[in-house]
Image 1: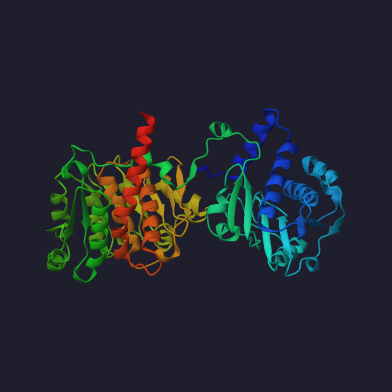
Image 2: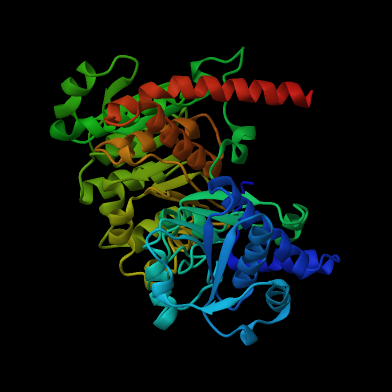
Length: 503
């Protein structure tokens, strides 16, 4: 269940399923039963349950759940946001099947000890909540426990935006596949635990819908993940170059270089200014260090085509010299990771950078955090005004011709062709100085081994998140590379089993 759907794609899945003869009310019955089951798992029979229902299909799901809960010995109480006459279609059938009373929704009807089923709006909400709906959401947020139907009310399913105010659910039951609003922020933090239920929509509908966004997990890129060959050697595993800044900022490059080596690159070299050479040389063992001063020497250094991946920007300094180094890196057939200062150096002239990246045939990866992204694209309204983080990353990828890895707790990797992945399990303690340099290095190491750019960027994000979980709370950036061998051992075992099963 890697696929992530927009509201439109989920609606299309419903339409296709009903077009094959499955009645809409059957889908609603299955959805309501899934919600009731979530209540059963959490609360004993006899518990009073307050169902807060809106007039649409989300409310219909809630009414089905109310009926089933009553049949199973619970004490459901149905609060309607509007008059029952507003129900239509399948929701009207669900309302007619409910054999209990209705009460008008009033905030005072939801107390601090209440167990609530939030069936107000679901994923399709596209306008700010106000009036009674807003008051009810405020009341629901004061309840003891909240089960959200499909998506917490007030969250837009496609953008994950809070539409004025949103329910903070304890758990969410969604159907068929997760929506973008379940994994992008801020929607994700409103969902609590998430369960995906089968309601009768066949997975074959995905072949028609053709979603282009996935949860970032190994299934997305494992087939092309580089595994050392028995007959391989260090020169067959690529040579990554990491560009160092001056004497006082060498740490970032050293973090990236060690990460590239841990990620599997056969060789890694730090291209170092001469004043920083003693520090870089003394602080590295397996990573090589070479004196490279300015864009002319750098261009000459890169004439060796075996140096097939470059990571530039971590601790490199902002300004004209960095811009020249970036242009030197982008010339030729090598993968290039542009991070940190390599991006900020073009904040006043992003079109110049776009001109250098857009036509490249080799892999180019941009790895900004939100601040760097905003600085780089601040003058490009079509990018910064996009409705979601996903769309901002996608538009940046299209404009630059590069893979855009937009960092954060919900890191998005977007390709110019529309493909995207979103991480959903990065630990909060990854927000530590130098962690982004390690991520850039991991990506560079995978690209050096010939992994395709979108898959390499997605794998780097996943590995980085897993390393954060292995290192645990209190980690510092240096811990992340040292966690990679354990993660790689599990991945390689998984790949071996996969290959054996395919024989």
